[in-house]
Image (cartoon, helix red, strand yellow):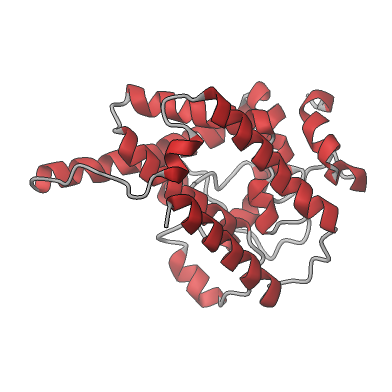
Length: 252
């Protein structure tokens, strides 16, 4: 079984879980659901062709991730520190997505979804899919992070992103405990609020402590209004509209 096979199985399991045990009834418009997924598929195919340092093919086609096993505690700690460094790079890149206008033009496609479910995790403009991986890989390479470790991190991230966005019925007490260790759906849904105060918070990818350290962590009561204050028309969920949103954005 390849990593891609594992990825597909996990995604289908999360989708089935969400279908059988949703936290709230979303009544998601079907074409929007598939348009969300199609944006990421298109971005992935485009990235395939670029064949950069760590391509999508390298991430998902390898049978086994080969890491240099630590010969001692020092090397083991180095791998852990480098893994955490990748997570910090993801946090920093995500924060820049919200404050650097050229990046926000692309990232707003992800945030313009008026409902949040597993399909939202795939709702990224194809150009953002490409630019995100290139930026992260270049920074990680400059920091001396091994490609194999970056592949491992990217694979784990690809598995948890659908969980972050999924509309799942999970006991609140369990989520409260988990929120100190990992990003939970409740934590990330705050980030998708239409209220800008909450949108510009909770940037973490795997671990929540970067938000706590840099004071960008926020909690909020049960949120019902997601998306942005613009691009709220139903037609904005169409695939063609998702592709053109960055070019139609004119907010100051």
